[in-house]
Amino acid sequence: MAVTFAVTLSILEAAFAHGFEKLLIQDSEGEDETLQSMLQTILVGRGFLVAALIFFSASWIAHLFSIPDATFAYQLLALVPLIRGFAHLDVKRVQRELRFAPDLGVQLLSQLVGVVVAASYAWVSGNYWAMLWGILAQVTVQTVLTHVVAVRRFRLGWRQEYTRRVLGFSWPLMLNGLVLILSSQGDRLLVGARLSVADLAIYSAAAMLLTAGLMFLAKVAGELSLPWLSAVKHDKDRYLRRHSVVGAAVATASVAVFGPLAVIGMDITRLIFGARYGGPDALVAWLALAMGLRFFRVWPIVTAMSFGDTRNLMVSNLVRGLGVFGAYFLIISGAGLVGVAAAAAIAEGLATFVAFFRLRRVARGMLAPSGFWLVFVAVSFAASMAVALMVDAQAARIAYTVSVVPVSLGVMLWFEPRLLGIFRRGG
Image (cartoon, rainbow, N blue to C red; front, top):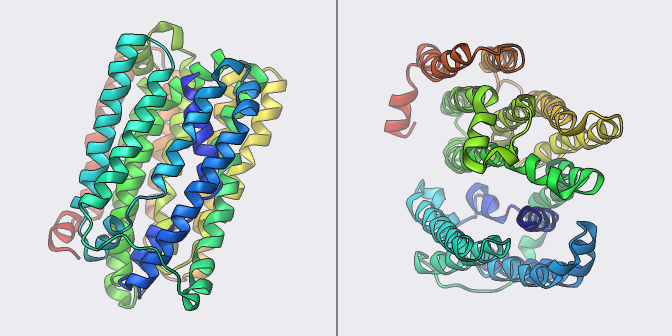
């Protein structure tokens, strides 16, 4: 039941994703206070709209998951987007100067508070309300802290001249949000509606560790890479050098993190959640492959976004959303949770291919070094899946898992020896 809160919130907030913080970072006039105040105004309006949708849909959502007694909890969940709408965008604007510490501090402290509140309530009550209070605590602290660390005053405003620019940058991201509902949450909706809430709990427990890793890595990679690439987008030589470094780092992190999790991820899930939440090893293996490919896709997405192209994300996620239809047919054919995970992995592979293919057409020459890293990621994940699905000996599985990280780092430094130095010097 707690998982349904996160699913509901993710779906409705993704439906109105805007990417305004990315516009502040990428746009040549991102320092303009009028543009920032305009984006703040839209953000507040979005918060009220999503809150209203959640509040008035609470009863329907509760019945969809066959838990009508949770209607009031879903109504309280509407406070989350409302509070988040008043967050100060200044914490994102300063990333134009490669100042990441304010946002990092806000994120870490608010997440810590949310975990403490949720864990404390769970310890006392032992019910799903712990998730709700944890989410509310996290978003409240996060919003307050964005104002504490802000340099500028919080202002609302509007400037008609910026309307076309904001819409041009944001509409693909908003449309992508609708696609994201299908692609990222469709599998959970299918499992909860077509199988059972118990199956949803097992599926979500298996995906939770992987999703947490993906969200953290994608956030770090995206927020570091976008301003770093955008700053030199008019200097081709420096851009290509930085682009190569980003590709090497993203490819290595994808393999080093999700390769081992494909092999031992279910063991970790059982250790954390207990045997009741354990599923077949193949479930986590396919999910790890899906998450790894999704993270690798950060490279072409950030590259496109550094030039103001937000359509690559939309198009690739549209392809990714096709996995939901594959998951549906696998469910009705009896493939169960493993079939849902396999469909997600196949869809992520197609989406990654489309993202690179489209970028090659839009920005010729910007992916000169990509061939090697594409092969590296493909071979590495093929090896991890082979071990996860075909090797039963625990010693061999552990040996493979331990070797993946040093081997991946070794490959990265061998083919991109300037990487550490480039990061230290700032390009």
